Length: 324
Length: 217
Image (cartoon, rainbow over all chains, first blue to last red; front, side):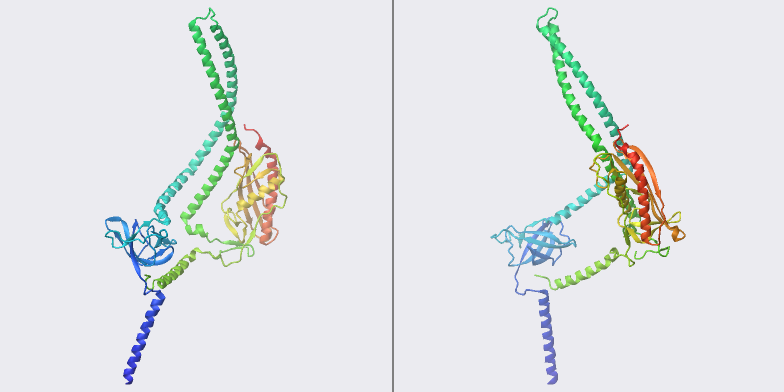
């Protein structure tokens, strides 16, 4: 009797323990035993790197299911078919979109479903589809990842170009160019003064010539016997030409006056500032060059410094630096 | 359906990963040395601020170039002809270039009665650029405490920007002795040297500054 009673107690204890263990597992995993699920297919264009079976599916940020299967889409090797299982009460209606997203920068991927408009019809399998298909869209972070290689390449090219631009040879050339520009501008400014004088003299001369031509024209029109028909025509053309020339000189005069101000302003204000800016740029380029050499030779020392002995004024001797 | 044990497993994994990450980042995170905190010093011009002049040439004080080893916040120590070190438990409040430029911008505008501007003046039309080169800014310990001195050697160059004319250049040297055995005494000596150099620089600059406004050629 005692032996038999002991078996019953042991068996009962083991069964109770197992039942408790299963209940604990169900409790800790938060398994809904009575939950109902619906399967959907999502087709993504391109890679789904970071997404695995059991990855979580969110609906507006709420976890509502998980990924059941991942594989290539039939008849289209550029697409990936992801089968997801969602709770049946999740309203996946017409207009809902699924997209691949990432948690932080850890590379752990999940699927986020944005609901369709209120009152929409639940999506259903079409034709011979085994499961209903949720349309996918590219997430902003996926767009960044897609374009990032191009951006990085362009940035590298830009840095290379800047390095070429800022080398000592080019900076020296820029210095020469500015020096030459300075000389050219000074000459131009001086030349402008001469040109002003020349234009003024020319205008006086043309006025005199125009007056004379007018007199000749009047003389020709009067039918003076000394002027024949060819002479009339020649004088008329001369008058026309001189009047056109006077207008052209007037325009040149205005243009030179305007440019003279600009040139003077450029020489007076912009060139020295450009010179100072180039000096600053040269200093910056030199510092960057020095830093890059230090990093290249010893990255650790460039960041954390090198242990150096320090002079202690109290002991009047050098001591080794601590903590580095 | 949520996978069984996925959340506890993930939590444990994340905890282990975080611990490993923190452990791995340990060498990158510096909490400083265990020694005493360094005393922080500055150069302090004890004169007045420069007068608000309406006229006269405007000078741009360029950022000083410094000899190798002087560019940081550590205070240079010269041990012998070729050996260099830095002073323990003391440092400048900022880089030496900033300290020297700010000191001279203030002292020379006061003592030379000059319109001077320093950093952040690229959009201002100026007449001259004052270039600076700090050749030495060293504490020079002697054989005995009473032989200690500092050496402050600064070279100035004045350039007229309108035509790039090199107006003049001069090197100013001061080596006052250190009056006592402490870091404060060393810093006093540096300030004395800068004050004396500043007076000499003001005389030199006063004699040349009018050339900044002179016409080219």
